[in-house]
Length: 412
Picture (spheres, rainbow, N blue to C red):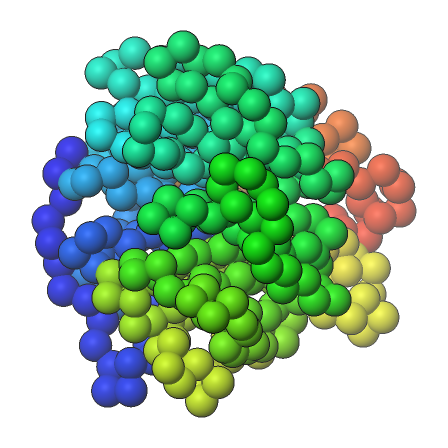
């Protein structure tokens, strides 16, 4: 499961992009040697050599997080699995989406929306329970403990040998999405659903600094390798850069005009901030000249178009289907197969898409009736076990309009 050290992208001004995914960038990881890995809504993991991706395929739903554990690349996704690359071996199976991965020594920890923390070591899996909602973020300590952050609004400390919760470090009141633990400096930074960005003492939980702005929610955090810079991404598209030596906001950069910043990571040398959001590319800006470079693509994503500019059938497609499906002959690395030529096509037969076994062996032929049934019942009921996320269109006229639009758009 070892990965080679590969060259990084080169740009004269230090700014670069990594393009190739077919969906939003949900997670970014950087190895000690500087290798970049990306997780995407397109169900894929990208492992980058310069600007060329090696696609790691196997997840059956969106990939939320990637993590380098020494020479091994790990990923977790909406299919409830922790996987190791190359190969995609399933190490842990949760009962909810995997949202974060941490490692220390030979132990791997996973955070899941099933409310548990998975611990994987030497092929043995055990689970820590106690949170009252999904777990979003994890950090190991050097003395055999683990810190967790949860949608239940708490930070908790766990003993890894016994699996017992030692104590609740903090109760915030709103869901905590992100956490960074700086053990050398003795502090924890966390970001929450209500937009709070706060730094506390790691032992006493006493407040150290507060950088809360009128932007919510906080969706991403990253600490530079030297611990001197904290980056914070939010739902309104900003990256806030905090100097942790002086506890001040050094830069506040509008990274994207529309949509959130979902993923952040520093380069191995700390010179660049890598970021991902609704755009299908990962962007990397030099920290020293962050505001001097372009934003993430301002080309409007089709699913963000003004609904008043579209007829109802097109509106249904853009809002319910377009993030996963194209209308062109190529599936374009999307989370779902192309809908080009869908009418009369047997399910599970598009050549450039990796289907679940459920659809590979299905007897469904896509036509007016089967498409109508799919959206009336929802995929969970109509084709249980497929990769398609839950999506119901309850109004008959909306379903009729969508089918009519698909026929026109695909030349049927």
